[in-house]
Image (cartoon, rainbow, N blue to C red):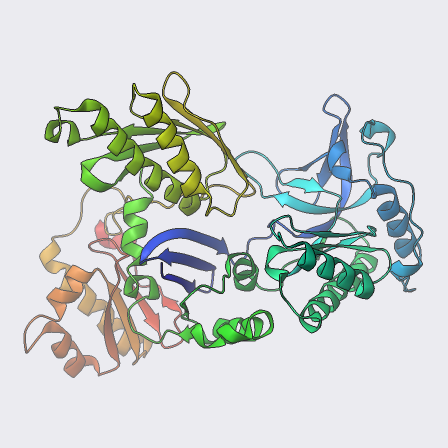
Length: 525
């Protein structure tokens, strides 16, 4: 299996796509301005105590107050709060964590009203992003995640990932980290640390400790909570840290600055993979070049087809996701053996569903209505196929066997909203009004815009992104419209086919890649 990672960077967002044998299996997209991301740490203020829920709402600056349950305060909550008071009582004095006193652990059974007070300052970390009408979910068990290690303040033990099976390697890692870790810090050793040398682990540990010290400095400067005191330095690297796998054959990036950052990052965590990082310099959008855009359009709709004409219907509700499996026209092709046909469709649906869960990052409860099968061995085969497919999923999940009604229930860890990519296009020409100018006049309209750009605005070099069909029409023939425009307005004009655009949609970009807005709704009147 060949895996590739493609990074599409824009001024307002970054998107990362992972393909396996050229098929899109994971897609992550984050706004560059997004603030309430998983892992960010805030100095918040308790806004309301809810004894009935044994929880409280915390003001961290989001539109909706964040939710913090008593169980998420963590066993070292009292140590963290005492240290917080010490560093905020004298904001000019440094107080190293090594000198902090460890308080008794918080009881597992307790009352939040007796632990917190309204208006109290509290250090919290986001564990779930805002989803629908809910605010962020918080924890007071602060941690700093690296590629190999997770650093936990006010703990004093070293834990090794259970996926590292070798007793000798587990012992080596545990003894190694015990010898180099600073006082009053705990460490979780991640699976990818297996076989790593002490220099690599020590370098990352120092980096994580520096992140904690930087957080302390920001807390002391934050005189009016709420305020963010720790955030991922770069969205792309944060996504890459969780998605990176040495088995990737190549990583393609379309931005020179991000390309350099990724090379620097990979040179530290996996220097042997430095040569797989490649800067994309093509004219086509990077997702179009690697056939990602087309797969996104075909994979994120309400109805998703898979082999043999069968399809899934995916519906999203507030409480759960519902998936219905339909055989489509397959029943007509193989009506003689309904049971075998149902098994074949269901197995194909299990393959596609596992991909869809990763692709859309669907979390919470997923209920799947498979086609009914009479034989127990077929139902067991379907359950085993689904379990095998989901074994490649990084998110925590649990799968139940088929119920007597043919339903399969899946729970999957949800830390951010499911990705919902709109695949239906709003007409960019009529803005949803239903009436457009004659399409034969579209190229005349484009030429008018080009004339304004080159003559009135004085922009001599720019690119025009249009639908691939329109691009083909403009470039058709020896003396094409494109050539005529170049002779008339200058050779700085470039036409780029862009699969993301609707049929009569267009965008102008200057040399720096910044869009030049030339659309006017008044044209439609």
